[in-house]
Image (tube, rainbow, N blue to C red; front, side, top):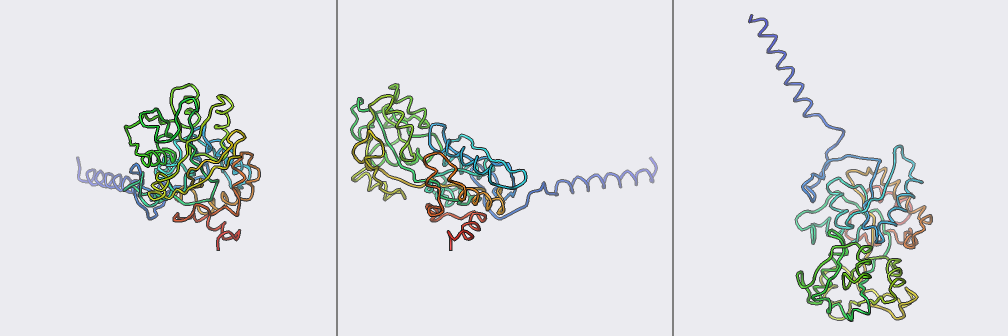
Amino acid sequence: MSMKKRFYGLVSLLLAVALIVSACGSGTGQQQAGGETGTGGTAESQVDYRTDLQIGTGSTGGTYFPLGQEIANVLNDHVQVEGFNSSAVATGASVDNLAKIGRGELQLGLSVHLTAWNAVNGKGEFEGAAIKNVGFMGHIYPEVMQVVTLKSKGITSIADLKGKKVAIGPAGSGTQAAAKLVLEAYGIKDGDYEAYQEGFGDAKGKLQDGVIDATFGLLGLPASSIDELQAQTQDVKYLPIEGEALQYVEEHSQYKSFEIPGDSYEWLGSPVNTISAYAVLVGSTTQVSDELGYEITKALFENASQITHQQGKNITKENALRGSDGLPLHPGAEKYFKEAGILK
């Protein structure tokens, strides 16, 4: 081979290498922003703004799923952004939704506000794996822990659940985290009972069929699923959280004492003490732009009256910041809250 041909061959090779290096170094439409690695090891620093969004909810038998579907419908009707679409998907609820936002698998999600606090601070279920790309976008409704069994089971206290078959909520849900804490408060640890990791819809059926003895549900009040269980069995019994066990829960979490009024259900009769928190909407700060976050928050809080689900009445400007303590606001939501006079 002549020197001339070798020269041109070497030049061609160098050009090819340069093109490959350039291609590898170029972006894919994503920008870098400060952040840590989230649950699952995916870098939260990747900015990948989208307009086709998924809202993580919970199990189909709980409150999150049907309410999330209506929220998606309101957003689709009122967010005037080209290419915008939102859809509600069934998930394991709070922990699952937050972890998936951290991994870029969901863009919006419903969560117990205490679980969201754990996520952003790397505590509890998120110990050592803080989610840094999540922002608060508004209060949805108060969540109430409802522990139910059937009168025919002869169970009179949560302490009686030792050795029993108990539905504690799906893996990765706020219900399960709270249920384990409540059981612990009554001296019942993992292994002291047979755990069923069920959403409330499935658990309700298993309780009715005699497969399990009791079920925990962090639900809106009143919960239509509990009304349905009573209609089918005429045998529902609430198990209260009270006394020293209640004090233990309050000392080891941010859950607060809550009294279920006796008139919450026609059949209940007398009040029941339990614990409560808030359900909130959270959004990804790396997949939901500030502008879109603003439009979403505005559309939700100015059109929530169109939601027919009974918990929709709690989505108001007056309630908008409940559950936000200790949580970073999504910049788009913050802009709307200031504009609407909700945040000073």
